[in-house]
Amino acid sequence: TIANQTSEIAAMGSGAERATEEQLQKNIWKIIWFNGIFSVFSSIAQLGLFDTYLFIMAGNSNTAVGWAESISGLSQIVLAGPAGILTDTCSRSKILNWCVLLAVLAVGTSIAGVGLDNFPIIYASLFVFGAYSAIQNTASFALYSDSIPQGSRAKWLSRVSIVNQIGYGAGPFLSLFLFAYFGNEWKLSVLHVVLIIGFLGMVPANMFLVNLKDAQHEDGGAEASGAYCNLRYARVVPWLICTLDVVSAVGAGMTVKFFPLFFKEDYGLNPGQIQLLFAIYGLSFGFFTWLCEKAAGKIGRVQAGLLFALSGVMCLFLLAYLRWLPSVLVVFVIRGALANAIYPIDRSILMDFVPSSERGRWNAAESISSMSWSGSAVIGGYLMDAYDYRQTFVITAFIYLVSASLRIPLFFLVPRYELPASQQPLISRLVSSEEVQTAVLASTRSRSLQFEL
Image 1 (cartoon, rainbow, N blue to C red):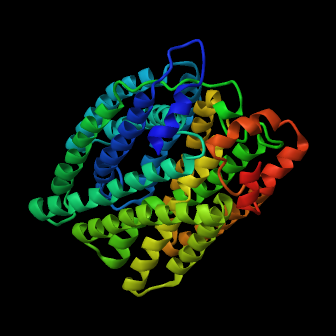
Image 2: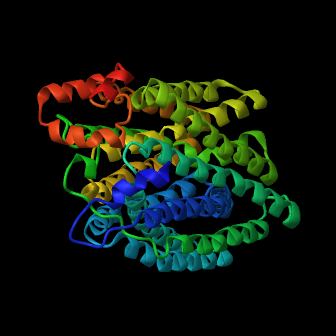
C-alpha cells in the first residue's frame, strides 16, 4: 500500500528535516483533490465554452480562437524555464502557496475581461493564467512525483490523471444544468454567467495547494531518485519523450481547440448538446487511462503507449472521412480517450529516468513541449477558415503518426516493467556493471528476469 511504501521516501535524504510518511500521504491526496476540483471548473471556464465565446465575440472567426490559445501557451513557454529552475532551487511547497495568490489574480482578470467583453483584458488574463499554469504545473507535479514511492509511479500518475479527467467530464455536466437554467442558446449573456461561475470555482480548488510538505530532494543514489537514472543511455529517454510530445502537441494545437466549433458549425449542436458530448468525452478519458495502465502492466509501458497512439491516429483519419453524426461522435470520443490515456504512462517513464533534483526542469521542459501547440493553433485557425475542419484533421493525423514513430527507440531503452522499490538498492550498487545494465534492459522481454536481479 502507499502507506507502507512512502516510509522509504521519508527515510531518505540528509541535512534537512525529513517529510514524514503521513505528510507524504497528505501531499499525494491534497494534490489529487486539487486536480479533481480544479478540472471541474477549468472545463467550464477554459475549454469549449470559452473558445465558443471568443468565436462569437470575434464574428465567427477561428483565427481569433487560435490567437487566444497562442497567448496563453506562449506565456507558459516563456516562463516554463524560469519555473523549472525555481522549482529545483526553492521550496516547492512555498511556490505552490504563491500560486494561490496568482490564481486569484488570474481569476479576477478573467472575470473582468468576460464581463466587459473586452479583448485586451481577456488577452491579459490569458497571459496571467499561462504564467500560473507554468509555475503551478511544474511545482505541483515535481512535488507529487517526489512523494510517490518508487515502483508505483505509473499507478499513482494514472490515478491523478483519472481523477483529473473525471473532473473534466463532470464540468460539462454542471454546465448542462446551468444552460438549462439560464437558457440553452449561444448568447453572450448566457455564456457570461456560465464562464464566470467556472472561474470563481477555481479559487477554492487552489486551497488544497496550501501547506504542503516538501519531500526531500534526494541526490544520493538510484533509490533516491529515478529508478533508471544511471543506466547507459538514460539521458536519451527524457529527450525522446519530450520530442515526441512536441510533435504531438503541434498536431493537437491545429485541431483540439476547434472540436466544439466543428460540431457547432458542421452539425448545428446547441450548447447543451455540446456540454453533454464533452462530459462523456472527459469521463471516457478516465476509463481509457485506467485501461492504458492495465495494458502497461501486462505488455509494458512503451508498448502500451505505442498501441494507444497508433489507435488514436486511425480514429483521427476516420473522423476526417465519416459524415454520419452518430459514428462521428463515437469515433471522436474514442480518439480523444486513446490520445490522452498515454500521458501518465509517459510521465512515469520520464520521472524514472531523471533524478529528483532535476524534476522541476524536466517538468518545465514537458510544459514547453505540451504548450508548443500554441503556435500551431494559429495555423489551425487559418487553415480552418481557409479550407475546412476535416482537411486539418488529416494533416494532424499525419503529424501524430510521426510522433508515434518516435516511440520505437524507447523499446530498446526503457525496461518493460517498473522496478519495485525493494530492488532499487541492489541496482544502485550494481548499476555501473554493464552486465547488470544489460540484464535490467532485458526485462523488456521477461517480467520474471526483472525479479531475479
